[in-house]
Image (cartoon, rainbow, N blue to C red):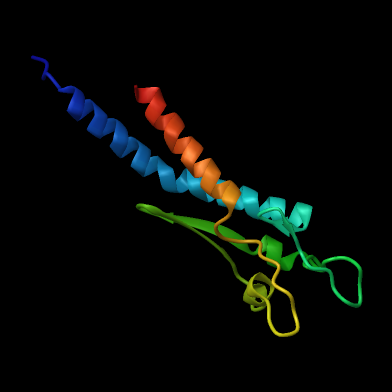
Length: 125
């Protein structure tokens, strides 16, 4: 015998599947945004500040910091981090080094999340 499910039960199952998928989708997009930052030498459409001694932003010297970037997911969250001792100095800046963000939230990421969630909800209705 088949169990009848209500539309509410169906929606609950669908929403649960979206919630489970969400962190990995966001983690992938965060990685893309970080890769784009290194490629374009900018974050959130703001160009990185150039060095005084050189006329280009020098965030990529050996590539070690870029290669150290990882994403992790847990239940309902996604995290991106760089595992070098100098990543936070580049990300946030110091009194001598201008901030050159390459991780975290951005307008593009927020827009992606909003569009992705809207798309997932619209698929259901």
